[in-house]
Structure formats: structure tokens, C-alpha cells
Image 1: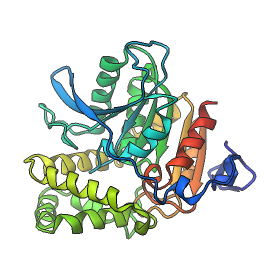
Image 2 (image 1 turned 30 degrees about the horizontal axis):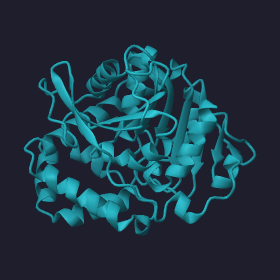
Image 3 (image 1 turned 45 degrees about the vertical axis):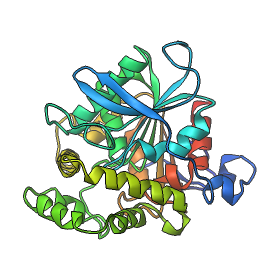
Image 4 (image 1 turned 90 degrees about the horizontal axis):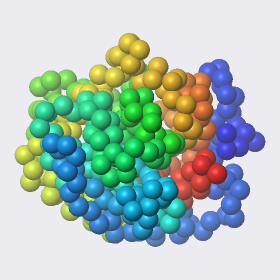
Length: 335
């Protein structure tokens, strides 16, 4: 654990640390250092061929892994409806320590849809594994995942354990069968036919309204969002509106995610978690409207080598709201 001084015992066992910057042992950062006013433009990217697929990939850092086999590498996996731009601030903070690789998953961001039409989490995990082997080779990397990207990271670590050196999961979308009022729309949207109708209705809304609604759900305090970041998100959403596969990618990935909630086989996500031996840092936002932060307690039981944090003043995207907290916590994880 990062700290147990403020930990909360729970019937699942273990402790969960309620984390503020002071808990991390660093001097108290200024508001600007933590979130307000901290803005970085979208990082540069390019298309990378991965087998018969093509992914748009953003990178940060100078020690290119193919040129320096000893260079630490981190791979960042975005969530449902997101893209590689969800990691901009954190990748910038870490670029002096790791070479960062953030793909747009197939059908998201600027990446075209998969040829096979498979949007299951296992397919996303396998394409990330191929990307790692293409850009890094056969050596382990630090993996970051947010929401659905966190669930994908669990699949990656289970299916390709040789490629994972550590995992940092931010509000991972792991099975929770009791929907909350704030996320009940997700299983409803996954229903065939219903999702398509809801998506068509949503797409009739103004893009600024849709982005604002999404941000209000994902952030604990949407007023913190830098206007420049909001403008970036609106521009990205408008570009995606012009793509014919946008709705299908989101709906089919959501259905693949919801399917894991009803998987009772040995491949069920929480069962896979028990076999992951790499160090894992799990970060939850106490004000998360999508993933119940009480899942932090279960995480202490299921992941054998886990450190768990709950950030009081954060929602679903702590890496965007409080990138400095995530940065400091990861540095403590890897030493």
C-alpha cells in the first residue's frame, strides 16, 4: 500500500487509502500543479500498421524503445468513447521517465474499425499486445488503463503476461452487477435495437452539448476543465461525427464490456485478476458517477499484488482531473 495511516478496513479484507497529495509524501502542490490551469495540447501521433490493422498512435518521450532496448516504456489504454488524448497530461508528466505510447483503439479516435468487426475486450487486448510487439519488441511495459481501458488492461495482463511490467488502473470497469442511478443507461444502451435508437437520438444533439454532458459525468467538478481542453474535445467529437463507424464502435465495445459482467467462467475479469502477479496500482475517484469507488475494497482482495487509492476530489478520469497525483502514485509503485 502507499499508506495505511488513513486506510479504511472493510469486510473484503485489506485497506484502501484515501489519498490527498499530502499522503504521497510530497510537498503540498499548488492548485495549478494539480489540475487548474494545467493544460497540454494534444500530443503528436501517426498511423502504425499492426498486422492487418492500422492504429493511430500518439507518443511522448525521447528514448525510442527500438533504439534503446533499456528505455522504460508505458502504454496507455483509453476508455469507452475516449481516445489517446485522454492521457495527454499524464504522458507529458512522465515523458522524462518513460517512452509513452497511447493508441486509439480500433474504431475510436482516428483509428479505423477492425476488419473482423470484433470489439470484445479480448480483441482490444490482443491488438494492444501486437502494437507493443511492433513498437517495443518482446519485453514488458508499464500499462495504464482507464475505465474500459482498465478492463482491457486486465485482459492484456492475463493473456500476455510477458508484456506487462506493472499496471495502473484508473476506475477500471470491472464487473459490478448492481447498477447505480448515474450509470443505469449503460446496460440499457447495450440492448440490441435500443442502443441504436438511443444513439441516433443522441447524435441529433449539438456536439457541444454532448461533450459537456460527457464531461459532467466523468469529472467530479466540470468547472475545473480548462476551456482549451474542452475545445479540443469538441473538435475531436465533431471529427468523429463524420465517421460512419463511430456509433457502432461505441455500441459494440459497450456490449463486449457488459458481456464480461455476466461471465462466470474462469475467464471472468475478477478471476483473471487473481492470477496477475505484476504490481498493480488501482486508483478510484470517490465522486465517480460510473464506477462505484467501493470496488476499491474488492480490488484489495482480488489482485494479489495491489496498491489501492481512493482520491476524494476526483471522478471517473483521475488522470485528467489530477494527473500529478497519478504521476506521483505511479512513481511510488515502481520505486
